[in-house]
Length: 337
Figure 1 (cartoon, one colour):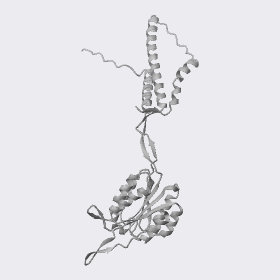
Figure 2 (cartoon, one colour; figure 1 turned 30 degrees about the vertical axis):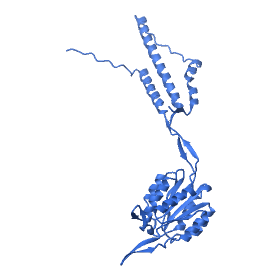
Figure 3 (spheres, one colour; figure 1 turned 90 degrees about the horizontal axis):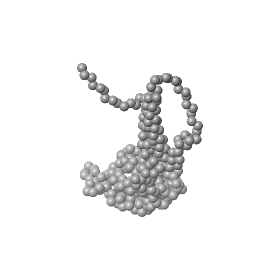
């Protein structure tokens, strides 16, 4: 069994009762009142034998209580099997566009056409699950940028918050510069080596108070690498009075997204479908690999409460016995009418 004592030095307290009884002077015994009995010798013999027996029992229980208290003081612990925790120390923010154009259905999942945001949720969710050891955060942006999830090792929460993102929650337009500025603000206080922003959008900057290129300059000065991803098929279906027709998708400002990535030491990618988006995330794993350094963690379960509870129970029995309240139960005698 993997049981260890966190504070084994507490065992040094075991001989204290014996040493105190050996070295400290005994308390003087008070003189008892005299009572003359004709059968004094018989009463003395019976009472002395009973008192000696009870005294020895109480002494034994007291010693057991002290032993249990000392064991509890050593903090016995049950140690589980070692668990390896990969650690990279990277701070990675996902900035996801949830403007009105992200509801355009030009992405494919299997044989089903779906919206751009749904495709991002499906593929980015897998990417999030693979980022063991990274601190992840989520920014949603439309007319304005909002920090939906602060940097955290809790990948499940980031995944859930992304799944719950809705079109138009932050407005219908696209504030790319504000999203970059918010990311820089959140990453500024973190270690400089591994600050990463992955920005996904399907359009050009049409809102916000910060120009995307100026925001990129600030990000570069703060050591934040930005990987930009343009989401959307080359063509999209437009429905009109005379039926549906396909038109070229010219909404994505690819030159601007390329410039943002280049300034910060990142790269620009174009995701035309979910398969392409998945390949981009695989490439990001190569560009921003998870560190191979690992820490070992052994789950511990404290056991001190058990000997402590036993000591408390025994001490209560000693008190009850000394006060005369602990008596043997005897069957009542049967009376015949």
